[in-house]
Length: 287
Image (tube, rainbow, N blue to C red; front, top):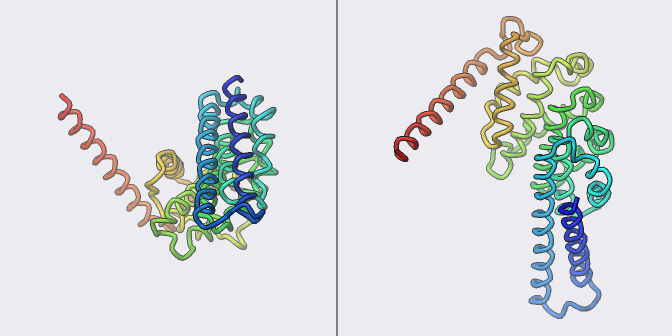
């Protein structure tokens, strides 16, 4: 608790210094020239960088302590940062708050799921931002929530599918500055299609999102490559679907996705073989 209190004190100071700098920048007459303006912008960025670090510390505490950390999160951490989830906040501050709630959802267990009804609409809204870091963070949170809390997330399935599909299909989805966002959306779609808990809800969305079209889109964009957790999760989710030969997702005799399924299996097997060869080569070099 001492560490958390210290982090929150430093965060409050950083927020205050940031707001003071912004007041100068936004027209109270104290900025004398462009050089002064540049220095103030640097000061704002410096405080935001510090907030990023402090939120990372809190995120690591959630990761290390899991659900046992949630009473502290509920009592002092969430109240300190929840206001920055508002869409009226600057994108940089929203991103900081979203990253924190992402960690809580991912590692906080069942105790974190009480936040989902109020947080998911905000994350969905944040995916419409023009700020890539905010969109990426929000999309990651949606994917994680879809994976860890299917019972709670069924009520949001229509908006979630709309978000995931439109993100995957958007222009430039495969470009360098947008691929992480796209893969987060693929992870979310994978978490829906691979989990039978979503079965009944998927049937209700058939009119807008036919399952065979969703399945084709999922397999066409597999495998993901950037985030280690997403790589492992999506491969395991696909393995689960294949192991139980879920024709709800694969189609009759796998007919919906067979060619892409074989391609993904081959690509994953090749990647594993390359990693094994690389590890063996590094081991030989070390010895």
